[in-house]
Length: 329
Image (cartoon, rainbow, N blue to C red; front, side, top):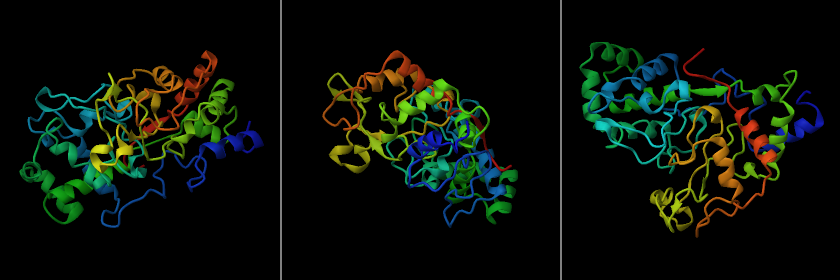
């Protein structure tokens, strides 16, 4: 059945947020021409290639034991498969490493949104004591000691390595990490066969009784906003204040950024603390109405889904995983 048939097109319009300009299939494997790129950091093949080299370089960590790729492994949709990440000197972080796919479309970064741009975001893990724990001057010094790096930086930026150029190269590479060509994307393009009946029923429930589209809308299935679902509420208190630590606004207590659902099948475990091991666990969490607390988002309510409903939603969510690519084609 083609997406152009009335019922499927109706479902598509309800999933894709009306404010988004992307057309069906625009989350393919080519770089999207609508990808936001700041005026001061033009995206080029050479810059992204330098950024990729830096992304996998362990010399950007204090003890040389980890790189950006240690927490964002390509084969795991740029996550690490751990509940919370591990950094230098065997230190344990406080939050789960989110996927990097389609982050070029992100409106803020990190679970608490403390970085407004990718240029800002990519430098924070290098400096974080629980992650790479390397001061930026030392990072630049190490790069400057490598003649090959110096030559590559000069070819791309016209100067030796600097903290700003390090940021621009890394963020350029991250912008090229994208997910597409999933069964759901092929369904939207009208590929013969479309989605199986179970996945189609999951899509219907996703935007209807389960109300998932209240937060997971748009081509990347995120509203780019922050919600308290109760994940951080344990034993009558918040274990992590979330967005509140950034804004100081009471309604942000225990709120975390809505993650993309792209590549969900490859990016377990889930939530900001990695506390839910499977897609089924996530569905059960929302079915019971999250963890009630004083700041629970008004959209989070018990769903009373049947076992068949839950299986259909899980099947649909797995249909959002396709191919992950990085760099230029």
